[in-house]
Image (cartoon, rainbow, N blue to C red; front, side):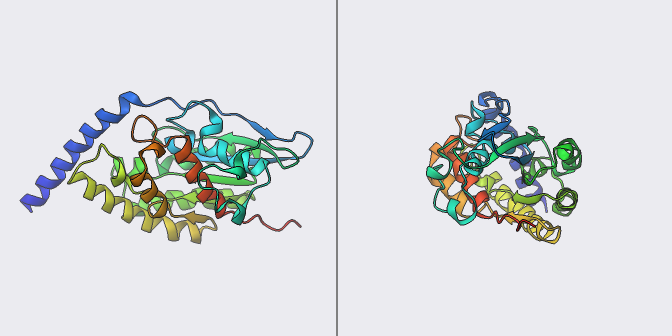
Length: 260
């Protein structure tokens, strides 16, 4: 018991140290670019919810965020399986629209957000009636030691509300935080376990609520571990290439509902 408490204390101390190493370098999130694609077409509304990973902290231009990448890809007519091979931000998102969709982005994502904040974020974007909502949440629930069950319950509630309003919902589940270079053992092992427990709670909760969970802690996190250029200069958030990788995995899961 004493040894276990000692490990937790060391992990918490290392967490504070890691925060000090990455936070001073963080680039503020860029302002949202609202419209993409051809203005002659009816707008397709993309809602972005979640924490700093959804807001775009770490890059300078909204086009380089996950939301911007998705908007460009949707405006260019890329969706579903067509995005599967474009995980480095390739041709699927290279154009700003052409004859594709006219995409409107509405974002309520905020740095530091936890799952309990999603209800307020849903309320903020609800007037825009999003066709597709993308949620990225979980890192701050781990940082604040939110129980996986509580975090998953709040996440499921947000998905239910979005589905009730007619939106398709994709959720990027918690990535493997142990790949962050500032993290050392035993914090690395603690974060690996906490992320796994949260992802295992998120996935069935999102599915049961009618959303599409996309696992990021396996293939995507391994890519981040192997390629430092996928990280922003702060070593914590994603770079433009990292956001393109994440965006492609999220978009590959999107299956538009048949039009009536």
